Length: 485
Image 1 (cartoon, rainbow, N blue to C red):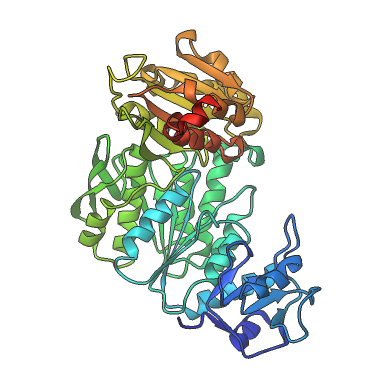
Image 2 (image 1 turned 45 degrees about the vertical axis):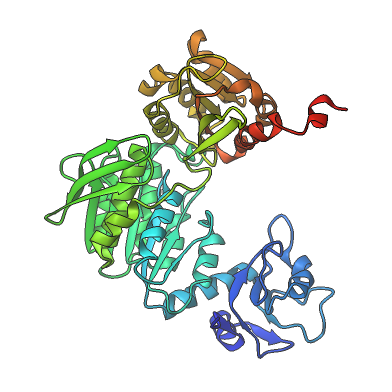
């Protein structure tokens, strides 16, 4: 494996000082000793715990060097260190240098929902047409973006960078660091309202991603959202080419027809005078719109559009982002449920999108104790909605898709508002915590049910997902486990 950074290149990028062995080279960059690989540069960031306390462990596990702001305790005199004034600034300098040395086409993605799914979808498409580098997980903040860039090999053909925010003023600096050729806003919705006065404020922050565009760059934005004018104005101010995508008339990249099935979404549309047709391997209008943006990016960066269209059909949703799974709840009798695992995050718009997916799937009748298969939504708190949180939670009761949901179970004190707003016939269980709901998993579902689990990450409804996955195993443990003998 070729070197990602030599000691001298890293020193030059950061302006730091080399101590100890100075002939090292690294093949990766890590901030976590639990996942560090031999040959990595360990970056001693300070968060809840000080990374300097783990430098000795990192070196013992095979790190080739460490980026630090002081000599840590417990390391050898000849330990390979790159000492900088501030470690986060040093990591940012590495990211800036990595961006400067590459000839890659760089794409930056933000949005109130769909960032990570769109990033992964775009990675899936572009890595089949060249060397593609993309952020791991949801590394989209003040340290995640520099880390993503610092990990980028020099010979990268395509780079996909996710940019997020929690407060005003965070996106533009990260976009300027990234210097994208294409910047994408997937959607604008009620998320992080604690930090913004209005949805318009969120739109302006999302649109600030266009401020970092390279000269001649392209802005791609959702033209179907209510705040599309704000996005369009910012795009025109900072981009050589401003392109709206969506299903409404007037979108330059337009989906003229979206057909949904239980396992896929088919999109027919037009772009730059040409018609296209593709299938994306996930049901849901929101996935279809994300795929529309991905198709547009592929065309803009010069990828083969026909190949991209074919590859979209092979993409699968990541865990926690709306992935559909068939789970056994009685392997002996071959009884199953359909799970939609959307437990990673939630806001009103993304919950609404998930409900549409839920009702698009037909339960199986006559296979369970209840007899009739049900559509069940297990919903956890939506966080960071500010003073509107009660109204936004309660408002889900009136979502059009709710009419076809048989039962709603609610987790968290915020979701209690929704629980109380539901008609009694649709109320399931309410618990204060996800742990409580998970402990009742055996009573929540029956064979033939279709079950959606969705909530903000902080609601911890992923615990409910894991409990549901264990049902089949737990029900068929060894006899001594069942009887306690």
